[in-house]
Length: 273
Image (cartoon, rainbow, N blue to C red; front, side, top):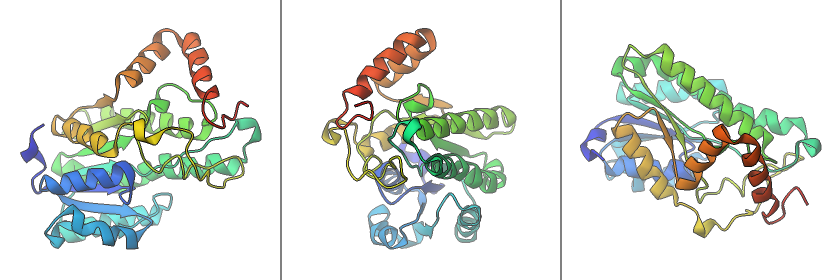
């Protein structure tokens, strides 16, 4: 990775109060970037800001619920007001779920689309003029579930497929004007996303069915993201299992369906049971 690439670049990271977002903000700060942290938890971000950069002028914390269009507009305006430009937008804020569709209150899918899909659309829309001016980059952090469906996550998979379609289209529209669009698809990564995942009635799951300690760390995931950005990649699919799953889904979809069913059926507290 070209570590000097990020020096003085203005980078917005949504969902920056925990997980991949926080790890990425820390890494970008270490690499000399000017980091804008966006999340709903402003007090938490302000407490974390000294970890991002020793120079407090190089960090901006903005309270932002990405499902609210005005919050996203304000995020972009606050960034430009402080730093005068935007070089990279990392659309990382996201929400998951775990329930069979037959049992699901449809408000859960609405909520996931509002956060995962519309949050990406809103932030990208308002940042786009500045990203075009800087010939910068926009990133969507999706999931392997945005390539190969994961049962009991209908709202999650649908939103991640939608983000991928949106960003792939945006890339083609701006093929000739210097904008780079990266679809970034981690595999299972240790984070709070499964604890905060919504269940059938819209409440939080409050626990994880996976052994988080055995998953890729958020810090390692952030390092892969930085490498992809420094090389201006258009797509990154992480882990051997993730790449194998995407490949198998394309070539052997029915076999992949059966294997995926078996994997989810073995989860602790599987909705199939």
